[in-house]
Image (tube, rainbow, N blue to C red; front, side):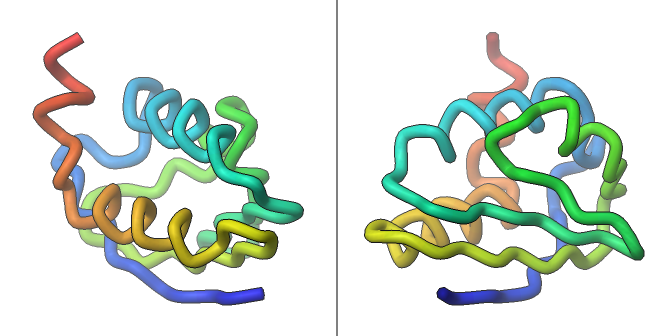
Length: 93
C-alpha cells in the first residue's frame, strides 16, 4: 500500500469530466484499493459519484491511498492527473 498527497492543478477542480476521466482510468489498473480523501470525506476512485461528492477545488490538497499489484503505475497516473497533464484531453471531448 502506498499513499501520497497531491495539490489539484486542474483549473475547474474535480467536477464531472475530471471525475469521469479519473474513474475510467483507475479501473484499468489491477488495484485492491483506490481511495481519495479530502477534508473529512473519502471516496472510492473508481466510482464517479463518490469522487464528485468530494468536490476538491483547484489548489487544494487530497490524499491518495492505493493498494494492489499496479499501485506504483496507478500512482504515476494520479500524479500526472493532479498536475493537470490530462486537462486538454479531459476538455477536448
